Length: 473
Image (tube, rainbow, N blue to C red; front, side, top):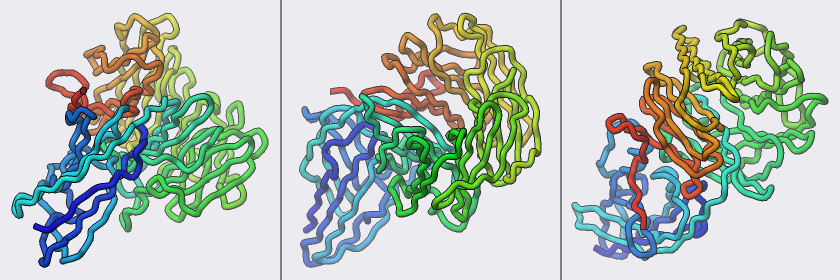
């Protein structure tokens, strides 16, 4: 069969945070047409294999791994075929973020394999060398919304010595492979965050890849629109009002109106519309309790939600004009608040309180405002000998609590209600832990050699583990 196949790596020096992109080419040099797996195929026909320099396989990536690592549905191995005519050349680019984790630190060789057994087709490309760098990670912010399907975006800040690069990575409900993981086209120095969609629609899938990125530069507030992490022509710039600071929260509507939440200390929360050239105040709200700097503000299709620690956890719900719809203390605690969150998609408030710095007691709380289901758990001790540095916490669909904490001894531990601790990783001063608990439980953490990844949890062995074993050289 007269087919010529090859690949070209588009960046020979990627990082552990950015996605590797590969250009694929197939040419029919024969006199007849063939039906072969097309560029849209998601079977195992096209494989990108990664090897250590000595020839040992690190990883294989194809349409089957793409399905397995992005969806909880059954993997479909059927091929999508298309005719390639005599003299025709197919050329397309694949983003390997969709197929697997980003690559670990090190030097590797990349090879393309194209196989289709019904035609006895078995082609391979020349191997190309790459070197994957591992810049240190500084901060992590997560943004979840549901403009058409549920999505989770991570804003990762990496770099050293005052030089920062931001990556935006988007996941579905299975946060293993990503829809994309792109370096951002700006290098902000101030407060940086993403706006979330406050609407749901079914007319188009385009909103899935859209985000607004906001950042401060002194007293100036900037915003740019991103599509799949790539900058568009839309941008906004304005001077922050005197005495106001961003709360790190913003939202945008289906008709592209952008709103940002600012704080005015000690207890003022304000909503401002961010137009093309100015900020206009929509409303000002005074908290019933707590400090504005501690407020978590999230916007949904019908309401604006605020949670803030104040002798426990205070909850307030406003309409989009700032009118108070609900205000109450949903949890009482004398312990120190260390984590409080509100998920506007699930409408669940969660919090963790700790008897710090010398005590060991921990209190966990979750309230589902859709069903009224409330869970509380008090633990006398987590059984750790060193102080806790970082916290992440989430209830699963059955209401069980999952806790991921790092300690001053540079260890990361996982606790499932009634069990634990289980050592997940060690060696990093900051792991930036994150628990995602939908149908499955995923444990996110930073490790220098791997960047930021989520682990799957094996109920059979009660040990967190990677979804696919990667061989060491």
